[in-house]
Length: 277
Image (cartoon, rainbow, N blue to C red):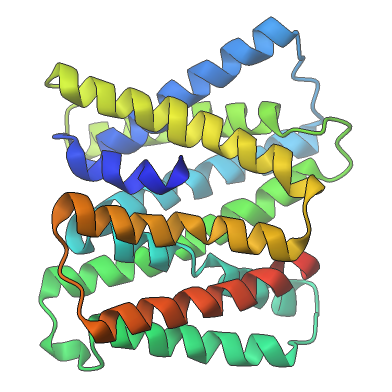
C-alpha cells in the first residue's frame, strides 16, 4: 500500500504541494470519521498537543520535500532516499540520547552512501541541476521524516491506546492545514482537474496514507525487529519496481547493485534504530 504512494504523486496532474495536501486531507478525514464511529476522545495533555504541533510541521515538510523529489528523480530513488531516515534516527540516538554507535551502524552509513553513489554516479557535478535538487530534496525528506518519527514517539510515550489513530488523525489534519497555507503562499491551486486525478488522490489518502499507516502501526508490536525491518524494506523495493514498470525507468546493472547495497544498509540501520530510538 505505501509503496504506491510515489506512484500516485507521479500520476496526478497537480502541484507537489496540492497532492501532499489531499493525501493528508483525505486520510485525516477518514481517520476522524473512524474516531467518531469508535467514540475515541481526544483527551490529550497540553504537552502532547505541543509535541503533535511539531509532528504536524515535520510531516508537512516531509511531504513538501518528498513530492518534489519524486518529480525530479522518480518514485524509486526518491523513496529510497526517504528511507535514509533510519540513519538520521541513529544520529539522533547518538546526539540526543547519548547512545554509543555500534559497529553495524558504522558500517551501514558508508555502505548506504556507496550504494547511492552507484545509483546516481560519483561525479556530482556532472549530474543535471534538477536531478541534484531531487537528491537533496530526498535527503531533506529523510531528515523531516526522522524528526516526525521522533516527535510521534514522544507523543505516544505512556499512551494506553494500542494504535496511534488519534495522533495520526491530528497530524494528518494539521499537516493538511500547513500544506494548504503553503499552497496559498506558493500561488498554486488546490483544484483537482479531472476525475482520474481525484481517484488517484483518494487512493493516495485512503489506501496508502490511512490504511497503510494503520496496518504498520498495528503490526509493529507483534513482530520482531528483524521481521519489521525486512517487511518495511518492501516499500522502497516495490517503489523501484513500480518506477521501472509504470514509468519505464532505465536501470543499469550498476544501479541495480547500488540499490541492493543501499537497501541492505537501510536494513542494517533499521534494526539498530528501532531497537534504540
